[in-house]
Image (cartoon, rainbow, N blue to C red; front, top):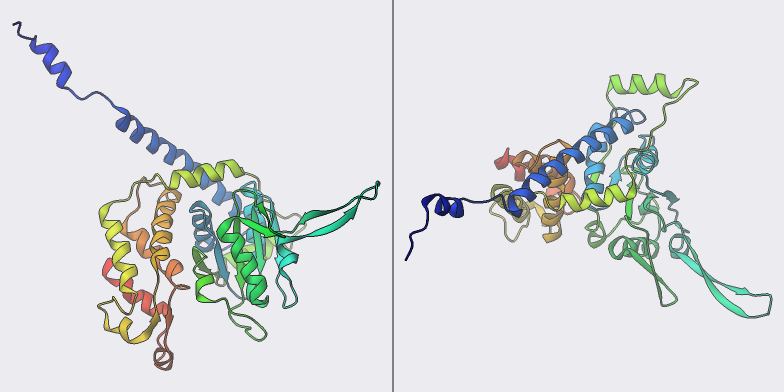
Length: 348
């Protein structure tokens, strides 16, 4: 029996660059390229929207994660302008619907009309509503009736609508950015908890700082106004959404997400404040949303993997609409925001 040559044996034992190693390198390159594209997206949006960096980032993270966002803020904070700008920069077809108490489901999803041909033959034809777009702004969604709200939220979840027993698929990607005024609640229909849970994030829109408001005042009242330019297409956004799901997540981040979300449930939490003050806590969909969001934030920041800082930063917008405090907590001045701050303290 011949003895194999030592050189041949060592060559056979040495690991060859396999698919896993190549895939890892390719993934890193894809993430870096996407990070550069998203940097250009942020710069294009920043030429039009002033002083809302955090709002822009959280909205972009929501779209990268494939979800919908609830924008909460008083009127006049450029929420509508943000949606229009996002549609232009990301190459998405966008529409806007002003929700009012008399708005009907057919006004959003569309309806069938009876038509008669030249030969006298009658048939129904479906006329699509404004929901057939890629980026829909639902302005003051809590002013519409629950029936109309549910029609929109069904489209958000299923990416399709049903009219007269026929299903009609919505264009992809499909995202809803809904707004709410936190001050004026007279004549509104607050979204129920199950429907709030459909939104990946609740983005609170605050006032701009002094420098940003000064720049906005000068730029928007002049003769020429900046306009955004298209940086990505709808296909690019869908490719980015698929890439987000491929970003690796470390065990420490996974455990932090699970611990954080489960600590917000009064029947599972070890925190006395949560057991006493929280009426209901976040469900598993909150964990899923936070997992996708931290991946998207890492790419947005040009990193190859999320960290605990991402969990801390995105826990408030991911959880604030998925929790509620009880009457005793409100009487003591305890808010959902303060409870969330208590939940994320151990991970800072």
